[in-house]
Amino acid sequence: VSLLDLLMPPACAGCGRSGTLLCSACHRTLRQLDAGLDRFVAPDPGVVAGDALLLALAAFAHEGPMRRAVAALKYTGVARLAPILAHASAAVLDPLLGISGRNAKLVPVPVHAERLRARGYNQATLLARSLARERRLPVVESLVRVRPTTKQHRLNRTARLHNLGGAFAVAQSVPTPRVAILVDDILTTSATLEACASVLLQAGCEAVYGFAIAREV
Ligand SMILES: [Zn+2]
Image (cartoon, rainbow, N blue to C red; front, top):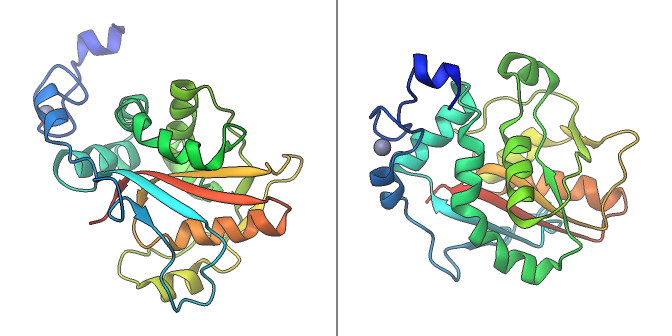
């Protein structure tokens, strides 16, 4: 227990109750996405720039306490939620590792340097590092976001892909993994993962998968 926790006990990101960052009552309400089609998101048919990402998988529905926990991690600086969310979702990474093979490396979806400065961290990097500890996997920050993108939540998938064109590049002096699992907090249309995947493939990566803590359902 840190001094800060004694002075200011943590509040549950889901319900606000004092004591833990995510209380057991909220934890029990997290809805795991069922195996099968609900969990696996393939790129939409008919989207031209949609064939780089092989498969993406998300652990929980992005709703209720999970939605609030992801928002707290992302927008209010509660970085310590990352290991909690990663621990809760690590078991869902296993079927993906079964497909990708154990040589896969985790690659966080990057944020732009401006946002990194404002936020102090990239939530996807924190999640990737925590997942890596859970499953003894390497993390490589192979991607950078070279230009900021406009907020995407009102755009459809085609508009998102257009919005993301040229947004990502491979990081200088960081080797591109042969097999990559992109890690992000939320999966919506998979346009972000798709844009990242195509950059990795162009840099010599052979297979790109995606993993998110929560999925918009
Ligand atoms: Zn709670």
